[in-house]
Length: 261
Ligand code: ARG
Image 1: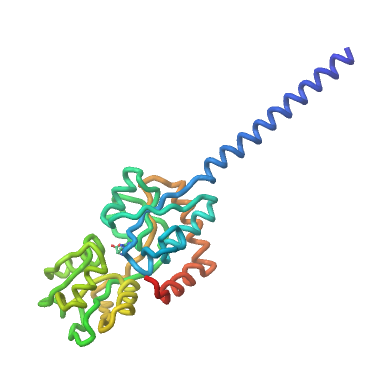
Image 2 (image 1 turned 90 degrees about the horizontal axis):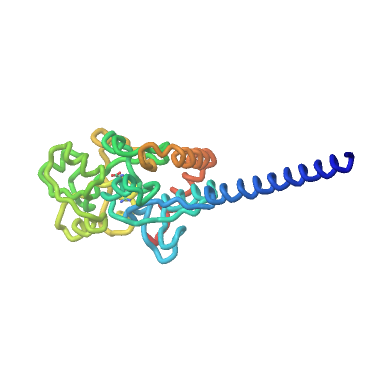
């Protein structure tokens, strides 16, 4: 009897150990597939200093403030940050149909977009500005009324000019718009402030004109598919940390000075 109890208890112990081992293996493999996965970020890499293509960037050939932020979000969550480059206009659709998990593209939070996607905590403050030739007499938004205005298709700059009621031409890329201006084919390009500063730095003979009365403050945030709370929480935690420890300011300063975009 005694022997039988001993064998029984040994069997039970072995069984418990086996269960424990499987449980361990299970939990590690499930957390592996969860945290060892990837986050597919969609962007439009035509927007220095936030995202642009170089030969060697922070993620593959992609570099810029947003790309460094995406990389950090990946690292904070034990996931690989992947970049999918597409047209700016396609980002919200790509989120909706699951082609990408998140959109990071210097994207301004707007009511219209909020109806389609969920936004993270904002991570950057911006506003629209006007880029003109150095000798231009445009000094405020209303001065554009009889001028040839160029915007980028689907950007908030387009919304602002529409709201002013002025006619305009739209281009797909910021660089195309700037070329129009440089070549004297238009008088003004309306675009986000940090990007404007970058273009003015890289092209001779241009200047930035602000109109803080007409152009309201904008906030950039990361978009996820409506209801994807799990990913949004991960992103928000990471953004909060990067705002607190100064990483975002650091990146903004670093990429504003970078000359390779
Ligand atoms: N902030 C503007 C917007 O949300 C322009 C963003 C353009 N971003 C880009 N990656 N091309 O419409």
